[in-house]
Amino acid sequence: KYTNADGDMILLSYLYMSDGVVSGFELDNGDTMTDTQVNGIPATLIVSSMEGNFSSVTWRDTASNIEFTVAADESVIIAMAESVSLCNSTN
Image (cartoon, rainbow, N blue to C red):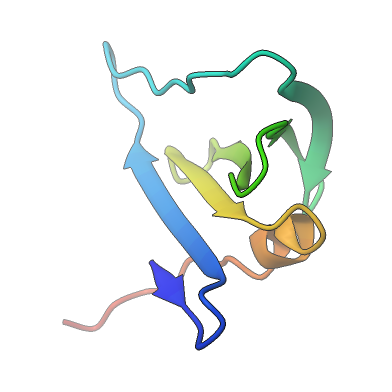
């Protein structure tokens, strides 16, 4: 979670996919779900209809077996998601 001086928040989360693991979102009336892509990978964009709530984009990297979600302001959310990349840890 990152919050800047203006209080704008960005949240990145990930989940290792395995049998029996399901992620989900609770939608408010008026929220919209749209198919999109993040770096060529199919994704779902969830735009909040509630003032002050963040939108989310979620996608699955099947090669790494990881599901990613970024929550942020709708105007920057896809660019934020496309900046996410895996790296190899040496620790």
